[in-house]
Length: 212
Image 1 (cartoon, rainbow, N blue to C red):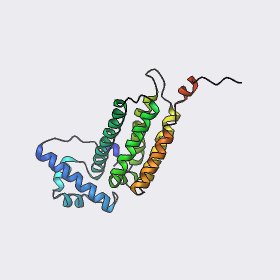
Image 2 (tube, one colour; image 1 turned 180 degrees about the vertical axis):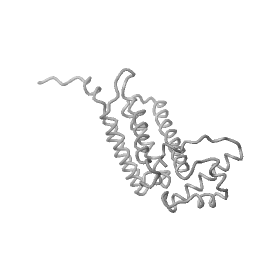
Image 3 (cartoon, one colour; image 1 turned 30 degrees about the vertical axis):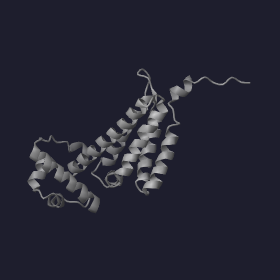
Image 4 (cartoon, rainbow, N blue to C red; image 1 turned 60 degrees about the vertical axis):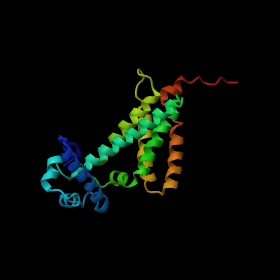
């Protein structure tokens, strides 16, 4: 089953929410311990102290659990980057490159803070099609942040999107495999470099120096 086929409506109640949360926590533990491919539904329900029936009431299966964990992680990442950009703007920052720096740095910091969770999604051990979905979602995140560079009537800079999203994909894979201090130094270096990028239309608008 591919990740595109695991969407399922979830009924919300106090008891149901508690069961769903327990299943997700159990799935995260099992996936981290044995990996997604080797994990079984029986292990997840045993860890959660739930029944197989309750799992299938909330999720369509193992892949759906994995994707739910990813969606929650992605939501936390979006909140981190939104907060970072909002804080920078509140402090008077208007330069788009610095706002991009703040967003990218916050994303990488979230990956470092949630190292074990991030490893779940960037280890290559996920449902069929997840790697592609991961790239798409990171590109969407990048597009929202690259939009800081352009005006409403300006086209999307595809080259910039590719460079930034590709760099972030590699950066995440690197920082989560280093100790905290080294990871944060690398995150600073990467985002400092990213902050120097600009879309092609901005470069074209810049006045060229006159020949002496």
